[in-house]
Image (cartoon, rainbow, N blue to C red; front, side, top):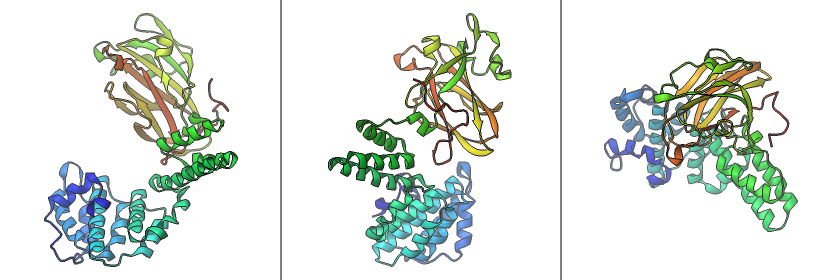
Amino acid sequence: MIARFLSPCLTWLVLVVAPLEHTQARPPADLKKQIAVIQAVGAEGSGNAEAAVAFRSLSQARASALLPLLRAIEPSNRIARNWLRSAVEVIVERELAEKKPLPFADLKTFLADRSQAPEARRLAFDLMLAIDRGASETLAPGFLDDPSNELRRDAVALLIAEGARQLAQEAGDTATITYRKALHAARDVDQIQAIAKALTDLKQQVDLPRHFGFLTDWQVIGPFHNTDRKGFAEEFPPEKKIDLKARHPGKESEVKWQTLATSDPYGKVDLNEPYGKLKEVTGYAYHEFESGEVQPAELRLGCKNAWKVWLNGKLLFSRDEYHRGQRIDQYKMPVQLEKGTNSILIKLCQNEQKEHWTVEWEFQLRVCDTTGKAILAANRPRSEPK
């Protein structure tokens, strides 16, 4: 039964402490104290020994400890969250095996509190499903606008299934409405792709770049050198000052800024298009994003080349690594957008490798909130490049 609830990456937490199966379950002497010990665990193993002792104590608690443990997840760090989740799952596993009552109503109240950590609310819902699947499943349609993407996914899945049933009944117009509703709520790439295909099959237009918030129009300049991979650390002129009218010495000749727009449905910007399939080179892409207000956001990048990203002249993050694969939302950078113009600069380096899988010199970048919902710029064109 443990496998039903316990995430594979967490099972070691159960294994590294003494077996719990033959220990009489009892509440920990000081629940708050044991939770605090778990929350004090740090990086590189700091506090792990103490956390293991606290975990054993918490895991022996009865169902009355579930809600305090779930509430403790929100203010905890990533490592502590793993310990707390595992304690919850072990308690539930044992209580179910012993046919002890679990607090369904309290879990439902916790689930309804959207200020709690999304992963804790998802865990609460999974526990509710184990207690009373029928009653729990009736709540799923209400997750369509939920801040927890894992919960939202369930509601979107119901709409996708409903759209498929409507198609099977040859109710194309009704299915279109259902799929549009699903697309508006969807955040996960696989679901968005499935919905987009269904709508396309229904002869409906789907603006995926706009849905995701991919930036599709850029100013690019290059190539500068990346000889012996030294270009990544070198400060070329665009890093010092953005002047879109300027010309600069490049790797082999003078270079200048030029417009590069992409029509790729997933916002891929290909620097091979203007410059050719070059190696040992560095290029830059620049975009001005107009925000209607000061607001938190995320810049989400997909790139298989070495890269650096600046927002409003401040270096956000960099990765001096080549050809490790590319995917949507590969790197997430939390930012604060200023009201008005926000400058985004990306540096992209190609290395010396000649294998066919090293040819790509490209990136995709989108602006969204923490759930993945697109944040669209005030200066974004009404339609994407063709």
